[in-house]
Structure formats: C-alpha cells, structure tokens
Image (cartoon, rainbow, N blue to C red; front, side, top):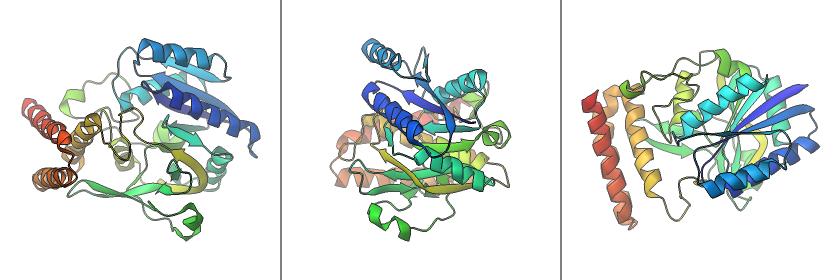
Length: 320
C-alpha cells in the first residue's frame, strides 16, 4: 500500500491544527486510492495550555504523532525536525509539508498521489489554494518571482473557483509553501545542499528546508535547489482552503509586525544567497516601495519592523 507522511507545524494555533488533521483523516477514509496515512505534528514551543490542548486532542485521533520542540526555531527548522522523525519512524512513498491553517478537501490527497504516479518527472507538487470563502482562488499551484524588487505574484489569485478550467499551468518560480507535496525521492536525492549564510554554516541537522530562513522564502530556496530533470507542477484537483497567517497573527486586513520583519529579512537573505549582484538594487528598491506602500495604506506601525529587518541584516552581513 502507498504510504504518505504529512508534516505539520503548530505554534499557538491548536484549533487550526486540529481542524487540519481532521480534514486529512476524513479524506483518508473516503479516498478512491488506497493509501496509509501518518501525520507528524511538531509543536514549536507553544504555550502550556496550547500544548496541553494539542496533546489531548491527538490522543483521540488515529495515526497522529506529536513532537514537542523545546524552542521555536522557525518554519524550516521545525519541519526539518519533523522530517527527521518521519524518516526514523516511517517509510513513506510521499511526504506532504502542509500548513496547519489548511482544510483539505475530499479526494485532494488521492489526486496528488495519482498525479505524482502519472508524472514521475515532477519533484514538487502544488495544490489549488482557496480563500476562506471557498469560492475564490488564492493560488493555483505556485508563484512567479521578481528578483530585482523581491516581489511575487500568486498565479490565479482572485479568480472564481468556477473559472479554474481557464487557468493554464505556467513555469512556476516556486510552489506555494502552504502545500508542498513531494515524492520521497525528491527529499532523498532530488535536492542540492542548502546554501547557508555564515551564521548557519555549522548546522548539525540535515536541512531539507534551509534554516537560514526563520519564516518565508523557504519554498523559493527549495525551487532553486531542485536538481535538473525534476519539475514543479500544479495538481488542479487538490483543493485546500487556506486561511493564511495563523501563526504570525496576520490576516487580509492586518499584517503583523512579525510577518513584516521576517518577510523583509528573508528577502534580503535570499537575494544575498542567489542574486548577490542584484542586492545593490533590490535593497533600496524594496525599502522605498514598502515605505510608500505602508504609508499610503496608513500602516505606519509596520515601518519599525521593516527598518529593523534592514538593520539586523546589515549587522549580520558585517559580522560575517
């Protein structure tokens, strides 16, 4: 039987995590493809009450494994610890890195499995991410990236779900990080080693995801490291409702300071690693564009984390 292992992170958003797990288990019971499912949840040092609620809920659900991390080391490190557990405790054919604020629609996982079996050349699969209303497309598989100003565009964003047949797959620059579905061979031998910033050069764990990034840009890094001969693709029939921003306090109307800080810091780090000759242009261009954007929208509270990210990046660059 086909075996699938799912990696989910939880950080002070247990309600979302429980809903996500239940949607996965419901899909498993009614799938038209026979597969075994194990869900590995890593808690990134949530509060005591959140961890207790998570433990009590997991005890009532089958095939759920819980890892309690002693500190919050971010998205990449949290999933790396979880992936290590997966390969120690199971022997999967596929691994799914899934955000905890996702609700998986019925038959989505079986659609991903069937697509993977039909297209062995694909190393990373994306899904159809929907807005919380369930009627609007958030992202059709992946995104396009402009490295000069570190901006991105989610393919298909804003289109009605009824228009999905009109959306054509493109050559994605990366797959949206809320749902990253891998044939296990991709994680075992399909990724080049992570390019590490000096502060991460002594990492003692395997970095499937690049721990140079605390939040954001991990999926772009994965796309860069995908070995020649492997592609990225969109599984249109894999439907996922994605709230977004559950662990960073972000929603469509109110971006959090944490999200602004780490998205900016990671953009600077990513450009340094992969587009160093464009850094001189990208740094001032991004800052000016963000400053104007935030000021026009009246989000002055985000100017401080934006500026702090630049300061911390420059200190990191000087120290290395």
